[in-house]
Image 1 (tube, rainbow, N blue to C red):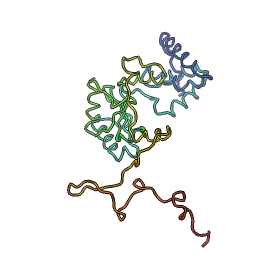
Image 2: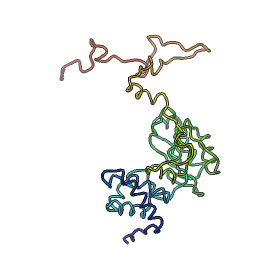
Image 3: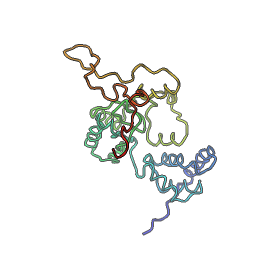
Length: 273
């Protein structure tokens, strides 16, 4: 059977959301460009993007519900079903996975008794595996409502979710203080974080992540970014590798046509020889 039309918001809620929506839309030269922040806005109302929320976005932007649904179902930051106060995302992309992300995700599934995108019975935690958090130098990384918890282990991650469920004060490794998913969604919609000290809270990427930015600013890079592989034998200090020891592509510059004109890269014989 066809679905019935989505129910509308109560009059007072709709009036409040319409006022917020007008403020968001005014920031864009074309109203339809405001769809992404408006989806965050309706998500802040109910904790996920409902059919009512998508109908609201369509109404205020002059779009069809199909156009709104296509966007809401494309981006994973928009939840399509009720979820917890804290979205706990475990990075399982390559580096975090091999550094322990897979083990963290598996241990949290068992500890919380939920699967991927599952929510605990108390409505506190929704667990999901996520792709790269752009914090590889702090791997393995867990995010809670998009705030960083770096260098995690299965044990520390279990303590983290236990504290969240118990209502204990939890502080991210860096960045703004933690808030609920609904509050996070409103901030992502473009409204100021009015909590005391939240804006002043800081915390950036690690040294490895910032090398490209420093080079772009014209700063002189260190002599080496990745030091030569070295071994410590019988308590001795690390030593420089001998010419016979293997150096990976990260350890030493490789000869290329630019650095070694006498041995240019590329084929050395004509095709067919």
